[in-house]
Length: 377
Length: 151
Image (tube, rainbow over all chains, first blue to last red):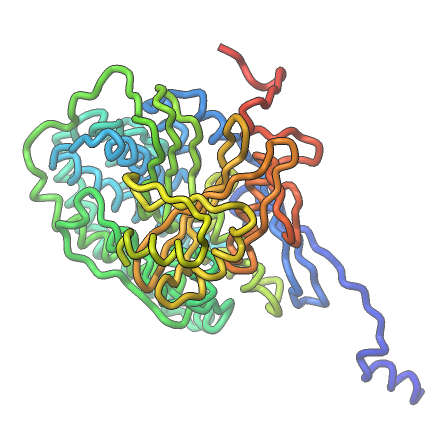
């Protein structure tokens, strides 16, 4: 008996095997076809290995055989929740390469659409985060408030998710006459509804206990792993492209880059809520001042970029989105690379989950806000 | 630092580097042998302090592969683009820089997966998106009669 007790309590004599649990590729908490191979000891995660590529569609290869206006269609199939920013990144890259100055009206409308997209994306993220942690109600609240934004998009450009509203040189159509009124109505509505999010989830004691101090990412790690967007800013890393390299109408508006220092799951969550407030501020400053003018400049029928390399970064809802075009002077790019924020954000997950419980792995993953087509491309 | 100052600093660190001005960012063509050494210096030197690797990708050219590194400094906010070329197209190999910027490990896996450029000292040089035995689709000579429609 004594020997038995000795074996039980003297852990280095016990031989246990690590075992592996497959999460996904078809799993609700992975928000798409992402597979996580988790190495466990009991309930504790030792390490994880993300396996991606289940919905790799070779967008970069496809782009090489498409002309510039055509390939914009593909960009909103990547990160479908920040489709407008992705479109805009390609358009800005082409416009900068050709040194085309777009009308002020275009800049204002693009920025408003960007921020509406950001709010819609954060709303859906908020729904899904609550769901991942077992709170079903958030899903109904978030989708209820997202619907008016999608209606605005539908009226503006005919699509609810994959807009393709930007074209090189401006926009595809002018805004609908109702646009300003509906956006203002929405802001008025959402200013009342957003505090509900805090009472439902952010202020919830169970939620706070569960997320505070979990999955801490330091500022140095965030920079070294290239974690951007709200996930990076929660660690105190000032990485907002809208502030650092302003584009479109961002130089004209006043807004705060929200930063936190803790870098844990709770603050990654909280910053996205605060970003929605900031987005509403930006829209309010612009919506009444949209200048009159054209909604696009006349571009050549066939767009050819000069020989060279062009890079454009924008702030998508998930972080820094970059487009890198290598042009050889033809009507299609020689090589095109999308620097997607989700790709860098995913691979830091292994650093965050060491030693946490497997249920917390889902919580950490939720606040990194992964969109799988953005990672797989 | 301005581009001119960066140029002088980099020329001091690596005498064989070539510079290309006039583009959007300062571009530096680094010999493959000096790549790791130069990256380490750029990362840890207080004047340059390039701590943020924001884009890593590869380009296929007729006689070589070029791997492009976009570096940013969160302290000084200057940007430099490093380019390293492989010696040949048959056995394209470069040194990994993942020990300097850990985000590079996954990006290098992507470059390996899509272009077939291998990285020395990389701890985990597996395919990322595609299966083993698949070709390297971003190469210009990649032919896939089943899935690609020629026009």
